Image 1 (cartoon, rainbow, N blue to C red):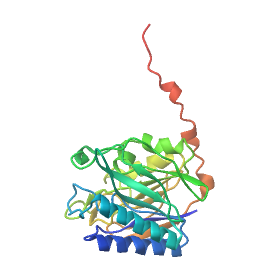
Image 2: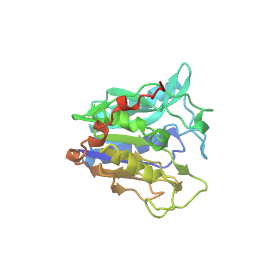
Image 3: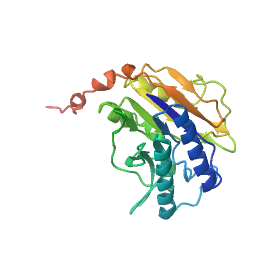
Image 4: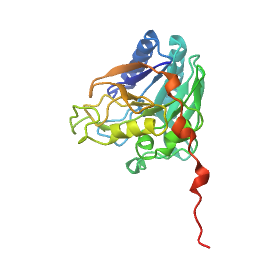
Length: 267
């Protein structure tokens, strides 16, 4: 399978953001990708960061979803779109999975939200396995993949060959300037990517915004924990890579034995 990870800059208008989405969909399809994954909450942008979030209401969200679904069908490519989901209790961070025929297969919400996000979002409560062209995959959103490895294992033990990881990690106005992927003295995020793949023996595909001061790169990690490819820090682009699905055995995930975690009682 060929996958694509789309890393756009922060959109300043909804029209600009939609144009970026269509452009990346078209390019990914031309380059043979079966699925393209966008960043966390790309439309309208992740709240609480150092940039202005686009105006976004249920009617706008519905229009965005209809438009992107039409493009997914037009370019015949499955799409993971990071956006918001409106519920009776509040906004959720969500990743919608759209099939290549334009039908929405499902949605994965961010269920473990960062403490700094609690002023803007409410957590989801369910997880889902998705499938494209016979390949199962899961989605873990940003904070979940960094600090809650069980979100990735949940998908791996259910047969996922790959977990997509839409994220927003870094800043657009000021911050560290990284130069080396996985540097020992750098932020821990890229090291966490390695562990999420290696501890489950699956692919881990992490996609970040093209921020001026990124703290992690858009990266594809192999089931053995090697960085297969990544995009340069701060550069907008599309990472297109071929997966060797035979390597994604899920071996270590399949050996997970929750029955061995029963609490011991003193007698």
